[in-house]
Length: 338
Image (cartoon, rainbow, N blue to C red; front, top):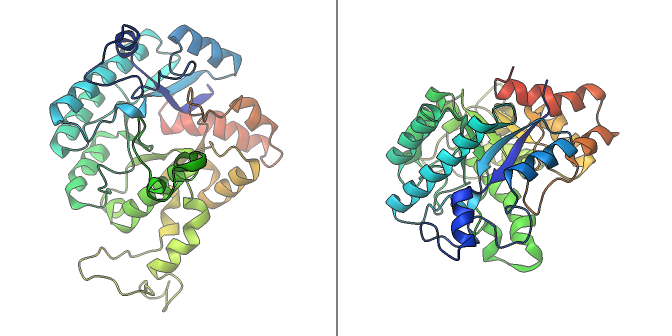
C-alpha cells in the first residue's frame, strides 16, 4: 500500500505566474496563495515530488491553498477562482496519477452554486471531493440552509475536508488576541471543534450519516473536550442511556435535540495525525479509534509536520500495526485506493 498524505495544499501555477509578473489574479494578491513567503507555496511540482520522495510519501491528497476560499467576495469572482483552482488540481492529478489525488474548493456562500461545483468536481474533473472552511462568513453548518449541500455531498460520495481559512481569514481567537500566532496556534483547533459540535449537535450527522468527513489538525480540541460536549448535551443527567438526554441548561424549543451523546459520533469523522505530539496522538487514537486517524502533514505550510513518516515510525506510543494503519491502510481505505 502507498503512504498517503491526506493534508497537503497547492497554489495554481497560473496564479503564481501572475503574482510573479506583479499582477493580481482575480483581484487576489500574493497573500491569498501564500506566495509572499520565500519558501513553501512557491515550490514547483518537481520540488514537491522530490520532497515527497525524500520523506517517504508516495501520494498526496492535494487541495487548493485555503486562501482561495474567498467566500466574502461577489459570487461570480468566487466561482471563477474555484473553477481555476479545481481545474489546476485536476491537471496535476492527470499529469501524476500515481502521486496525487485531489480535492477542490467551492463557492460556499451560495448553496446551489456550491452543489453545482461539487458535482463538476466529482464528475468532469474526477476529484475526490472538496476542502471547505469551518464556517461561511460566520455562519456555521448547522444552519438549515446548508443541509442540501451535505445531502448532495453524501449522495456524491464526496470527501469534505474541514480546514480554517487562510489569506487573512480570522479564527475565533482573533477577537481576543492576535499575539504570538495564537489565532493559528489555538484558533485553528477551536474552529475545528466548533465544526464538529455544529455538525453533530445541529443534526447534520443524523440527517446524513454516510458523509465522508475529514477534520484537519487532529480534529482540533474535539477529542480532548468531548466529555464537556457530552455534559452539555445531557449525557450525565437524568437516566441516559435508559432514557433521553437531559441537558443541564434550558434548550430553545426550536433547537435540534440529539438522541445520543456527541462522543458517539467521534467515529463518524476522520482525523489527520497533525498533532506534533506523540502523547496527544495516542490520546486521539484512544478516543476516536485507530481506524479513523490518517497521515496528514499540512505541506507546504509553515505548520508542516516535519519528516512526518519518520516521526510516526519513531513514536513509542504507537504499535507497528497502528503506524502502518495511519500511514497506509486508513487513507487507502478512506480514499478507495488500490
